[in-house]
Image 1 (cartoon, rainbow, N blue to C red):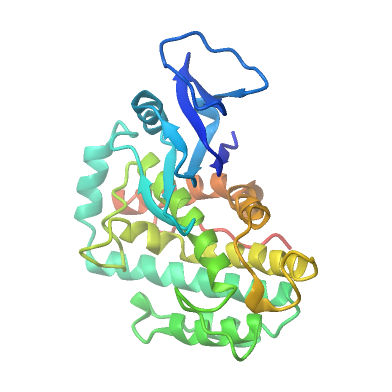
Image 2: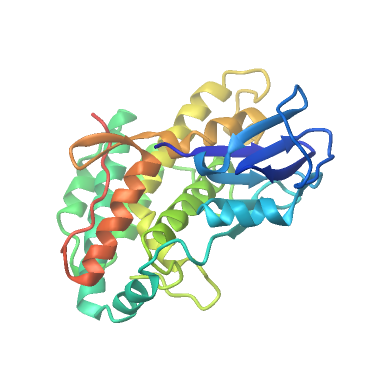
Length: 316
């Protein structure tokens, strides 16, 4: 089942009644009172929700609603005053074999981690090549680099691929930076949504998002999510390219790349990321479903049941 991504950019009160998320635009609510759907309220089954973005200081959420969302493995993203994702809430107990999986994950050897990282970077670069081909750019240099990725990517083919990829995709003057010029803002927002989806899926597979196979940072609670999202990043890039093509033609955004801003309409388009089509296991699935296949296969790599992570590719 495809889980819904809910975005709240206006004042509202969120509560729960009979396993349904009650969205009350009147900023009134009580988890214990009778709630029925009206023109001022919406009811959505909690089990149908995958990601929730809270992007307004006027959004009020009850403790019971928050608890119910986490109990159903919903990733809750909280945005800051600049409307960028600032925090992520995840459940601590969504898998009955969690302690066993943690033990396997912690015991993973360095050679295993380096092999898994090699697989990850190969697929990432191949997907970047597919993205360039889709944008009618020259993808051959990336395919050559992907074929040469070694265990652990010790000679950093990932960085070499990135330098070529960004220049081809957005022009020679573009630099991929967290606080750089647009479309960095769109990429950052899209990657934050993707990161939340990956972390949610990892937790659902009984894995600890903090313990990465490559990324290591004492201040980063989602190192493994940052690892596993790498091959999925080009799918975010594809939707950003599409948004740029559409928005740069509109009067709202103007004709210059530097004028691209995160308007509500742009954010709405970026919220399509979890339902983007990906090819995984020779079948086309929504990205969020593909992530479940990916993280489940990663868990089996840690237990020794499988040797390869199942990653996606672009639908041709």
